[in-house]
Length: 103
Image 1 (cartoon, rainbow, N blue to C red):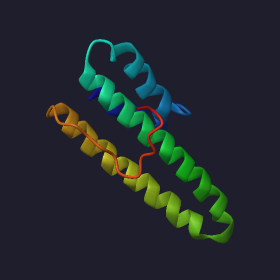
Image 2 (image 1 turned 90 degrees about the vertical axis):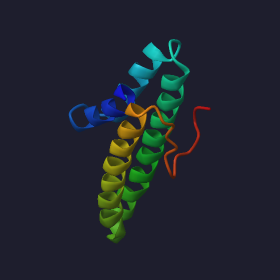
Image 3 (image 1 turned 60 degrees about the horizontal axis):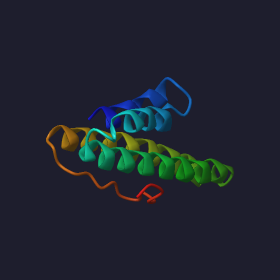
Image 4 (image 1 turned 180 degrees about the vertical axis):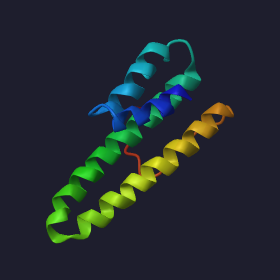
């Protein structure tokens, strides 16, 4: 659950949404395959969201990007909370729209 909760560090630290889960994943992946799978899922989702937000930021010039950025922010919050709940229950989490950078 800490892997998913560390995503919220991005609200305080620039790129904390990627750095936080990466640190927790690197420290605990050898101890638990469950943490390894959730760490990869969280990182894939956050890196994918960063790409989508970059594209949305560019599209701000044509005004649709503002709506996309707001939607992505809400999407990130909702699915991060869902992932935290699923991890605390011992269930797997597959994020939608996540590009599989780490397999």
